[in-house]
Length: 375
Length: 260
Ligand code: SF4
Ligand code: SF4
Ligand code: SF4
Ligand code: SF4
Image (cartoon, rainbow over all chains, first blue to last red; front, side):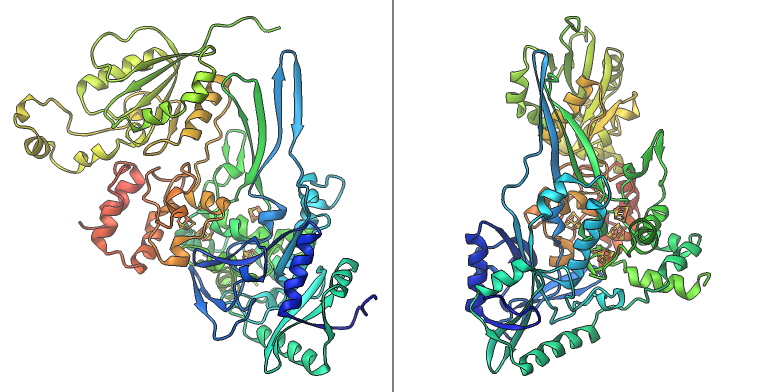
């Protein structure tokens, strides 16, 4: 029986467990959050037992620690260092290889994954980040076949955020904390006197189909109101804020602001911020050949505008100074991305702040320029 | 059809070093044996005596210059090599033995040898590039086998080696490691250190020791602030850079900024 699109359903822990099992049965590679080495990262999961039950995190600039919650929430944490781009846009990917055999050359392109992905626990900022990478990789005549092969048919099971991380600012970027589009199913986790429940909304046909097959009840209006309140409270508790409506012009008017030199004194040009950013997409293409030249291959790996080689043109790098590299990064994220792709390149997830070893904070850097720059 | 060509000649030379980098090369045995017919490999381990003869398409040089004799020998090697690539921390920065550069060599020889007057050595340990022109420097203590093969293949094919000069952090993130600095509060030199090892230490939950030397644009002063916040005092900051790449400029200068 088809489910009413607007109807919120209440699903128990057993129900969620059944949903994961159903995805695995249907042949999906299911990935979700899991505790590993002192972080909550994304990995393949086999059941509910792999999820970070009862864990949360403490985050600020250059600092992350797992902390225990006083309940058994499965999704009571904020995003960690991994993002879904690990799966959709892998860090290292062989594009093709060729082998010479006498006068013949055999060319093999990268083996496309056979299974489709299902991601569990996708946050609203991450749905926006995936939509941004869709725009980067799939728009226009030259869609990226490697990204497409991984993205097509991927099932996204989102979770509305019940806690705001210490470095989150999605409310400022209008990308969260409520999942509004781009998901197949969106869950809100409720832990009340009635027990441990998930209110589920479907966003697509596959989402509706999966939910119809998951044991559920219709959510009560009270449950729906509680879920709303949880997400509203998260929106009010963002770890960071940043005015975002005027950033394009503000930054491009201030390309000579002294703050760029000041931040360059602190910046390590280590590239961590771009590696953890869920929208950064840049890669370096590398060729290799074996000792005899009989086999050659070409791969691409994540690169960063913080490396010197990134801006290597004929004869040298055009961004020698760290000042120019930091400025490239921040103006691309917040300003020129609008010109290039029609949106901001920042979804306010806060990863670049938490995982910067010296705690450089994009919201602070904007504030400094706003307060003393050309307005 | 290409004309049949002469087998490329590869030579391996040793200067002051522990042989660890040559072991990385021996570790490539399977790959090298597979093409033993395609290239001609000449080893010159400890070739301190005897004349250097012949010409080589590619010379791999391990070790630093610590004696007047070696300073002369490296010039001969350069003269006989179309391409000269240094391998390892000793050859590219002077190695752990460059700690002598910060002290009086006579104290060391007196402490180690019964007859220090028999020892003829320079007061410093210096990288190969301080003596002759070098075509490429491969970092690491020891070098990484995969990178070593890449350099050999690239030079024999006449292409640029795919050896990145950015931070260890980028490799750490490519691997999906957790960051021991941010998530555990463990001091790590990864942000100022040259990539190449594949972020080996952080993968085992230890901080990077900097054995690949400084990355292309190291900001050791800024990292120092974080290391201090993690509990390192002046002496620790002085000592953490006094290891395999003590003589690399960025590490030497940062170490000098802190009192022992
Ligand atoms: S720039 Fe920073 S806050 Fe914005 S999306 Fe990237 S990692 Fe998240
Ligand atoms: S910020 Fe840098 S690494 Fe990220 S997408 Fe832009 S240019 Fe690429
Ligand atoms: S802003 Fe932070 S994370 Fe990014 S390159 Fe600079 S020091 Fe590294
Ligand atoms: S563990 Fe060390 S090398 Fe890895 S990202 Fe953190 S600071 Fe960089």
